[in-house]
Length: 472
Image 1 (cartoon, rainbow, N blue to C red):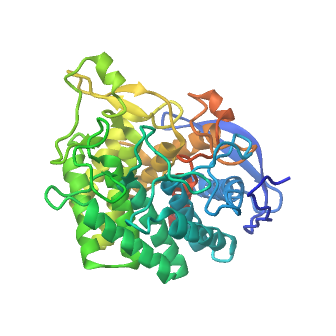
Image 2: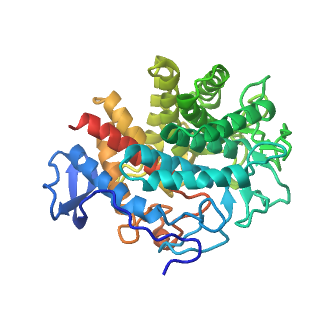
Image 3: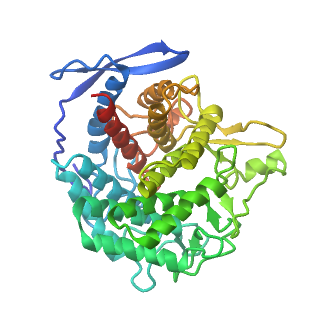
């Protein structure tokens, strides 16, 4: 029986059901690859070509194992917006708090699915369901900007757990991102106005006209915390890359002159200032973009403060894609400087953070003093980084087919890793971490305020779109 707030709806995406029959192991170019053997009862035999086969497997994973797990299950038909918390078997659990990031990401994901599957009106309805909640509950009508976190009943919550209500540039970036995607597929002018209002609110309160970029922490009235908050510096790579992402999406539907200036500003800032020449992003910075670093400290101190200073391989390989995407929107093609930086960042992640044995990107590394290479300090493999790795690997394989990094082989191996260690073939969805490193992830949550469908759906849609164009 559905629990309170759930909707029961038959979802059909027009696919023939495919059964997972077996797995087998093959060797290619020195890689150990786990490949799914899929057998269809009524469809033609799967392609012999490994890339065409992967296209078919991706379509199955997206359309049979991902989408039905999430939608319309997450619709909150009582309080509005989307439910957040589901356990390993997709049963409702927890407080069902509403974070702007999660809410906006569901709007974005459903809008992109509506664009990819226009014949199925489920997705536009799922996306539209979130718009009134953003407008009526999460937007601050008095001060502007989107609240960061609400209870299911609509009360403002302290996101940082330190007794202070704040707004965040990061969360507002995702509001723009989701709204812009919805505008593109729906033509809804009220959603466009909301995105424009949010952009201008960030411009008036979060943007730093002197040193460029955006302050992450803001008081409810929009006053930026120029010194940061609770020991965390005021600027960071994560809010910066997602502002870039949001402005890129918004520019598709609103080619405004100021928006173009800010989009290019963020591209250059991330590419030339936040990114270290070696190929990784510095995580946190002060107002003048002096980067926080503990590299001269003891190993014990560095490990204790790793949340503020480490190499995040997943963010780096994701940013390689986001830089190329932004450059293409700005200039009509990826300029040479941006492409070079994207490749350096991709190669750094693969060289030092990729598991050559079974695939998968490790979570964290660190350049300890005197070391020429980063040391892995956290060898788990979270779900979103694996999605972003898959997406960027496919792009690089197309751009550099003969490169010594062997992008295509790693792409094939990465897909096998995802199928073997991340996709829950029984209950649907993806585990929160690869079960090769964290077997307990089989029993962990499928959804939470920090775990939605956005990374996985984006990666699969992008890969399928490129596959259809290249493997016909």
